[in-house]
Image 1 (cartoon, helix red, strand yellow):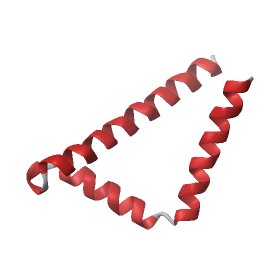
Image 2: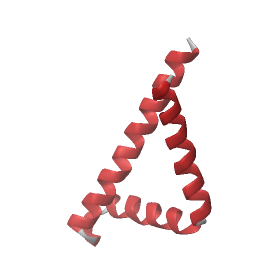
Image 3: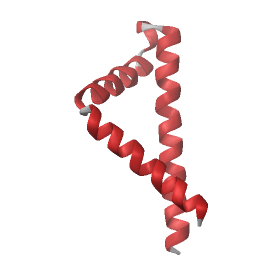
Length: 73
């Protein structure tokens, strides 16, 4: 049960990440007249600028190590 829940949670996180990435890419292509997409792009850029680079690097490393060791097991 916990394994299924974890799988669903990771799937949800991946979908949310893909939606945000798609909005950022569409924001780059469409420009400032995109409405909702430009709002998501502005919020994403604002969030990434407020997070210290060391924290962001730590999160990326933790996720990478988790996936790496999980694939080895």
